Image (cartoon, rainbow, N blue to C red; front, top):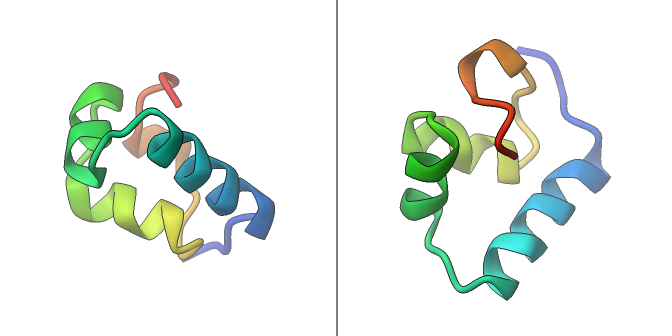
Amino acid sequence: MAEVDPKLGELIKKTRIERRFTQEEMAELVGCHPKYYKNLEMEKVCQASQCSAGL
């Protein structure tokens, strides 16, 4: 698993919180599995093929 730029995970989380979405809601909006989305925020993965470009 490749590491995500730490700033990307922070930015994703900050934006989600500002818009008052849960991680599950954001995962549904961008078209990926909730667990994958959580890993993005925690900066554990970075595989664009598993998430829509909606981020």
